[in-house]
Amino acid sequence: MKFKPAPIPKNEELRLKAVQRTGVLDVDNKDLFTVYNELAKQISGAKSSYTGLIDEKRQYFLAHDGMGDDFPNEVPRKQTLCQYALNNTAPLIVEDLRKDNRFSSHDVVKFPPYLVFYAGFPIISKDGLILGTLCVTDTRQDADLSISQIELLTKLTGRLAHQLDIQTQQREFTASKTI
Image 1 (cartoon, rainbow, N blue to C red):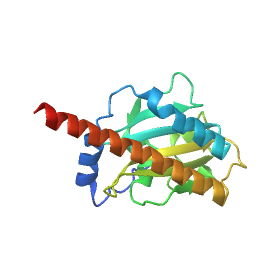
Image 2: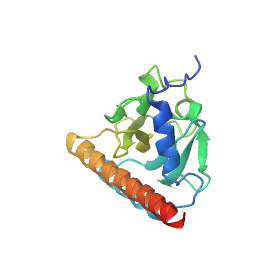
Image 3: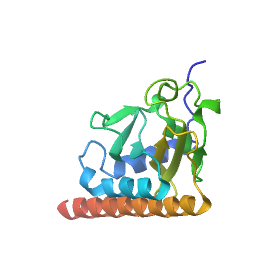
């Protein structure tokens, strides 16, 4: 069986415009966003965390922690686990990727790093559009999240979304002043 891409969200056109408006794609802002991944790892106890926005073709990573220095800046959208978190504002938590039909054939499950656990927290703009995800992943079979960890990670992701909203507003304000 081959990994299949997620269904395209119904609000995809608006969502893509919101992602572009952030102005953070292809910009090295790791210093600004790494703290969210460090905190996500500490809250969850997971081995790794990453933050990425998803446009029409790729997931662009704003920052990551625990992924190694050779972790790419982006991956094709059709190959990312996080595309499945674009259709629902609730966290997508999969305790065993190997047993989930959506993910069991994915390369990161079948080959190194052999991911078992995945939790993707949607980054939701002030307009209610999902821009991407804050994720935690692990290779341990006993990895899971308590209700309080899920609540904290949801709040952390909300702060990250607020950070992106503020940056977007600042960029648009600066652009309007320039014009």
